[in-house]
Each structure stands twice: as structure tokens, then as C-alpha cells.
Amino acid sequence: MKARIAVLGGDGIGPEVTAEAVRVLAAVAARFGHEFEFVEALVGGAAIDASGSPLPPRTIDACRSSDAVLLGAVGGPRWSDPAARVRPEQGLLELRRTLGLFANLRPVRTQPEMLDASPLKPDVIAGADIMVVRELTGGIYFGRKTRTAHEAEDVCTYTTAEIERVTRVAGRLAMARRKHIVSVDKANVLETSRLWRTVVERVLADEFPEVRFEHMLVDAAAMHLLRRPTSFDVLLTENMFGDILTDEASMLVGSLGLLPSASLGATSVGLYEPIHGSAPDIAGRGIANPFGTILSAAMLLRHSLGLEAEALAVEAAVTGALASGLRTADIAGPGVPSVGSRAAGDAVIGRL
Image 1 (tube, rainbow, N blue to C red):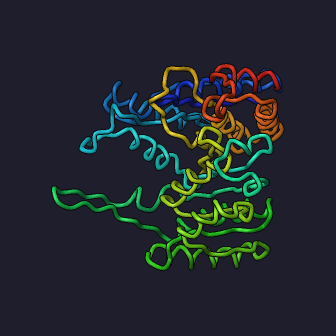
Image 2 (cartoon, helix red, strand yellow):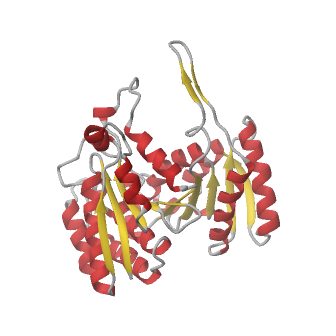
């Protein structure tokens, strides 16, 4: 297979972790007889510095002409002035909108060898396997925004069509898993959540009658993710709630650096990125955990290129590296030796 992959390193540790994922993808191409072309482009703060825009036209063109997009992270204190009219995060939000990426998939799966890396009790988190489906282009992040000296407003808006399409994604995923969906909202307070609940009920009942589903308020979901995480299969939620809950869920596996994500739309072109931020405090030191980005590359192979065997090989290689005791600094624990980003990438490539 021939494929073109846009690589947007972004800011902070973004270029470091995407470099390791690119090396892994190149190794996959060599091992399985594919030809991958990598096209680098700017996004976020780096793009602001170079062009004044967090998402330059050249970057949009590179993404639109590619089969998939691999992204590192955006943002940092250099561009964090609250009064700034142009911010790195605007580039990521606009890229999602431009590519029509409305469903964000964030798998959270614990591994026996990593149970001690979590701050939670091993017997609580053992066996947790959750697929979070987060609506990505609606809600408060994309609603009307106004600000004066004494007042600010962020409007949360959802349409029936937006809720229907992301619910169908969750339904299809649930059918391939344990056929259970927990839909998270705040229907006791928010009108958008009441609409969300009504539409989710209708779509699942009409189109996925085999799927068992329940509604859960977001505050209760936050509690039960830590109290009984193994009870969740597919967790479906709106944009902001999903953003917050998946950062919380990262503590089940021990680190934000271990979790991948895939942002998908109506076409096969997807955006793949770790869920962590740019971590400017460790940028340039070569110690960032690249596993979340490498696992995002595995999701790229699966969802955009249709290469399931190759995706499984990458995931098995990461699992094998962790099972061998290899640890980056964020998951090493007191007194445990750690390796840098390059060595972590080498460990995955060696197992391919």
C-alpha cells in the first residue's frame, strides 16, 4: 500500500513524540511491504511564530491531500496570554472543523504489568477496558463566544444531527465489543443534555436494539470511573465532558502519556494524536513518553489505512515493551530506572 501521512509535530514535546511514531510507521512499512510518505507541516504555537496563524493554508492543504494526519501537541506558556486573539489551540479546533472530524475515539485499557503505575488500587482497575466516544465539533468549545471587561459568554449548542452521527459511531463500536453504552450528560440542568439524552435513546433503540444502554450524569460518571471502571464498555459523551473525563481516565493506566486517540469523520481521513498536552517543562530533554503517540499511529493504521494486522503488531510491540519492564520517566516510579523517548521507540521497533 502507498499512503501519504501529514505529520504536525506542533509545540513542546509534540515534535519529539511524533518523531518516534514516524519511526515506528516507517518500520511497519518496511516490515509489511508498504510505502508511506511523510509530509511535515506547522500547527499551533510554532505556526503562529512562523506565519501568524495557528493553522496556515499550507498545513490545511497538506492535511487535505493526505490519507491521515498524525499530530503531537499544541500550546505552551509562550502563547498563553488570556488576552491574545490568536492562540495555538485555535489551530487544532479549526483543523477538526475543516476535516469534518466529529467523533473522537479514546481507548483506555489497563495492562497487568502497569497496574502499579496507577494511583488507584490494582484490584479496582484490573481488567478495565473502556472506549470513550467524544463528540468533537459541537458544544461549548465551538459555540458563540463574547467577552467584555465585566462579562464573558460561551454558548453550548447541539443539533439533532450532530448527536445522531456520533451516537451511531458509538453504536457500531459497542456492537463489536460488549454491547453496552453509558451515555454521559448533565440532563438535570442543561437543555443541550436533555436533547442529547432524547436523541441517544431514539438512535440506539431504533438502530442498535442489541446494545444495552444507560444514562449517567457527568458528576456520577466521574466518580464511577474511579470507583468501578471495569463496569464501563463504551462511554458516549459530548465535547467538554469527554475532554475532562478522559484526562481523569488516564489515571487508570498510570499516565496521560500512554493514551492515544483517533478523530474521525465521514471519510477515511482521520487525525491521530496522544491525549496529553505539550508538556513544555520537559520539552527538548528527550524524556517524553512516546507510547501514546505510537499507539495513535496504530489507530491510524487501523482506521484510515485499513491495516488491521499492522495495527495489532504495533499495539503488541508496545505491550511487549511495557511487559518487559521498560519505563519512561512518567511511569517509572521511585527508584525504577527510566529510558528516554528514543529508547522507547527503539524497543517498539525491535519488537516489530
